[in-house]
Amino acid sequence: MRTKFFTFIFAVFAIAIFTNSVTAQRNVSPVLDPVMEADAKRNLDVARQGFGPGKQAYKQVLLRFEETYAAYPEFTGMGEFLYMAGMSSYYLSENKGKQKVNLKSEREKERYDPERLRADAIAYLSIVIEKYPDIKDIATAKKTLEILKK
Image (tube, rainbow, N blue to C red):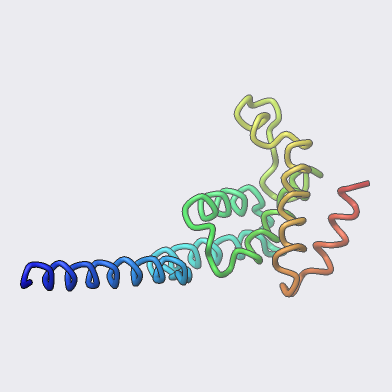
């Protein structure tokens, strides 16, 4: 009798644990990693400085964006980052900015091919418009996307 009782208690306990773990898995909400968030914020700040009117360091913006997106795509500032990456790709495809593209260099030719940059700009700005419609520069993103799709 005692063995049946312990078996029953064990079974109830096992079911309770299993049910709690399954329930917990269904209700998982993304938890922000404060270290990754701080690192991504730092990269965004550097990209903002490079994107600004005086700098126009669009290669730098793209490098910071790609590094951040690869490491931490859930970053809370990703909408602004995607906007800057899209606009930087567009500007570089038009050979604008202070960091010029050297298409004679094989490495830069592959990385900064104008057609590839235009495709990247379309992709980034499309994501901004779809997923982050509340960013402050949404009107510019929409206008630029129209220009790129012509």
